[in-house]
Amino acid sequence: MKKYDYLIVGSGLYGAVYAHLAKKKGKTCLVIDRRSHLGGNVYCEKIEGINVHKYGAHIFHTSNKQVWDFVNAIVPFNRYTNAPLANYKGRLYNLPFNMNTFYQMWGVTTPKQAFDKIEEQRRAVLQEMERENIKEARNLEEMALSLVGRDIYEILIKGYTEKQWGRPCSKLPAFIINRLPVRLTFDNNYFNDSYQGIPIGGYNKLIEGLLQDTECRTDCDFFATYRSNWREIAEELVYTGPIDQYFDYKLGKLDWRTVVFKTRVEDTANYQGNAVVNYTDAQVPYTRIIEHKHFEMFGAEIDRCPKTVVSEEYPVEYGEGMEPYYPVNDAQNNKLAEAYRKLGQQEEKVTFGGRLGNYKYYDMAPIVEQVMQIHNP
Image (cartoon, rainbow, N blue to C red; front, side):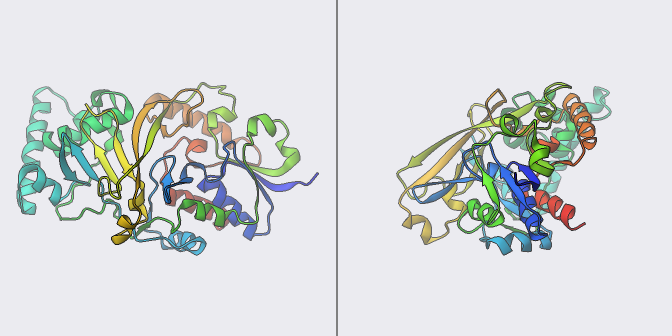
């Protein structure tokens, strides 16, 4: 039986980059994935000629030129710039919080006017906390109010956050938002990074390039197929599944939030005019609508594609058979995750990687950077 250098469980970005860099060093890899496709959550499904981000919007952004050059050497990236909107009871606001937002909210036109308005509201909150002898924010609600005041919190943060986490902001830990970026410039670019974009042709092109000439098997569940004998298959294991599942939940199960996507085709070339629109009103059951064509089509190209595809996102509690998305970073789960990570460090020739393997939420670029550092420290 052929023995590989690495058995890589999961063909998402971590696993695919790991396999690519290992292959460049002359190592052999077997990549397996329990899904029927490669790419993990960055997988795109082609509908009406549009690359649909099947598991939620993915926007690559980084200030690390080495990471940017690495992914662009696999497939060139386009010029997409993330500039989401927020819809609150039919009114639109630019995100992140910037001078456009403050003009839309209060009619202010100068940075000083905006700064003074925010400070006025912050002071009112801090004075109220002082009267109640609250020395520091005890929860997310108090933290957000103390950072940006009541208007921004009520209109743009509260409803969206409570839908996202399925809990009142007053019950969420304050550290979830240790800071809220406020820009006193007319800048709708969501990210501060030097580089951002989408792979031309979609993320499948990136995964295909990373896994070119690497043996891959889909519809292959690690626990059903290789859990008991993987050391006969490979010298080392790279595991990107849930860390608690690897250890058979021996310390208990970690909590996750997940997302249900309702995707549909609209018989129009342009449904909402933007890739991302957040719905911050608590009465709207979904958190945002993604119009996928705007990630890769610009200008007249939008109208040349006569239909469009949109996805509504509904955050829900994770249940058996669902895809885990967001770690629940409260004290109890963080303590349990740390205990699992310590167990993982004791496993010989096993690397735990990615969001599920570390119980940490990562953007894509840091994942690439982590794997690059493993192979080229």
